[in-house]
Length: 367
View (cartoon, rainbow, N blue to C red):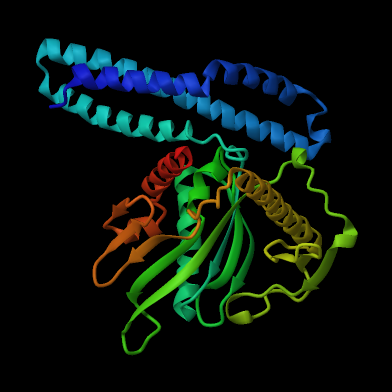
């Protein structure tokens, strides 16, 4: 049976520290201000601002409610344990022990949030997955990773929007770009950036040989109005083409897909998942703005590294191995966090990897 006399005060101290960092009182004041804005009759005259206000209100309300619920559960646990010990009720003590474990996990997860203090960490995330070395296995692996992240978002109730999918000829995808809209999505998912490696018996090899394949994951913050990422029309080349599905087949009969090329930087993005050319161009512009925002951030970091005499870090290179043969294991090569159930990982159970990655990055930055 758990030692409640030490475990509960320990969790209380941890939650108090989290409350000090997240400052629910300040968030409550901001919620009150946002509620006034939402009540304004002309709110939806500016759709973009209305969406920003309502999204921020929802995120803050959820965070404050989450903190309040954890505090209430911890208080209730203390009362439950006290009553159960007075009455010698072992069944209730067993329930209390189970709740203690659940609370510890929830508080540890929230503690990770306090480590996200980067410039864009609070924002939505824009991810691009690309197949790399490994032929058709790499394309299939890229599709597995796309599903993994979409399932992770679904598990947490986070909206996800796929902007562009480039299908490979035989199976899988060449690339896909999508966004996940959630509080601190960028800060949380940015530790996924890098090269992922899959080792398995290839289902595409008629001799049943083991194949190693690779896929790259890029994670960017979604731009906001305050970023001022201005892209003059003269700097853009716009190409339109027909959307394609698996195997390269056309999925519509009009040139609705859009490819944008930013001439000064050579950055190319495309979007084909919306129904109209106008919608696809707007979505492609959002992706392009995020990429240019990240380029500007990298340039600033490079300047600071040069001033500090720091060559920069390389935490975005090869970072995780998914081994399906001759044994079953998924291992993060930076943090050494590993699990022995690849199926659950590919089904979106990646929170352990995310938490470990955030803690590792914070530790690496501190050093």
